[in-house]
Length: 259
Ligand SMILES: C[S@@+](CC[C@H](N)C(=O)[O-])C[C@H]1O[C@@H](n2cnc3c(N)ncnc32)[C@H](O)[C@@H]1O
Image 1 (spheres, rainbow, N blue to C red):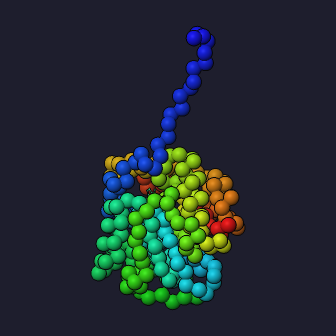
Image 2 (cartoon, rainbow, N blue to C red):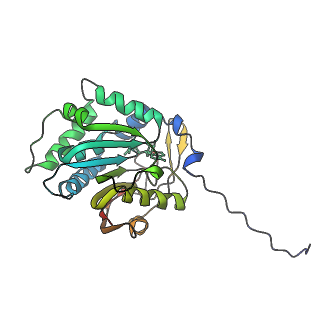
Image 3 (cartoon, rainbow, N blue to C red):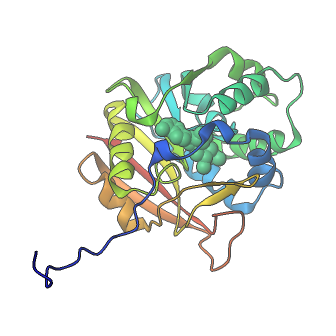
């Protein structure tokens, strides 16, 4: 063997979705940390998502809408509820499924949901007048399903939302791109896509367990969707130097229509 044989530089391997302990994702701790005290960025995201849902084709029709990686949040359901015939939460972690199911059954909405629902209601004005309490309608229209983003069925829903999922479940670029492709393809051609992504994140901690994120910009998100959607727009929201919440220092909101 030659003494001069080049030594392969070892690149630190990046962890994928299956390397993380999603069963240890503490739903209540996540809810309290991220949504316990509403932040103005949440309200901006709601307004962007409502705008996208208002214009989701076919206009005037009720839509079957999926939210991917719903986690412990009702925000995506609120934004889509006024346009929805049915709302599906497509979530991977069992704990989040149980949390969502029990949250939907609560007799009284938590104060945070009342706040986010009032932002949603306002964003739908003047076109649409919505009830003060969305929960009966939400219970009637929603379905919670356990599934991975990588296993979404193709061309199934009229519109799809996704808040902090494809980039917040892996450190691997190839998995992020596969997740974006699966998300874009789960809606029928022309269907609306409305998704929020962490900007420039290095991962987040939920009750002492670390979870991944890919560091993204508006350009890298557009590029991941370029082959899968038309009319792409990416809006940067509240990007700052310091962290506002674990792993969060701003976001990019993407809209487009599945190709
Ligand atoms: C950062 S959290 C976002 C939660 C929520 N959508 C929000 O806006 O706060 C990432 C979510 O992705 C879910 N997740 C992890 N792996 C997934 C997979 N393979 N498919 C779908 N969801 C996944 C997690 O359980 C968690 O709910």
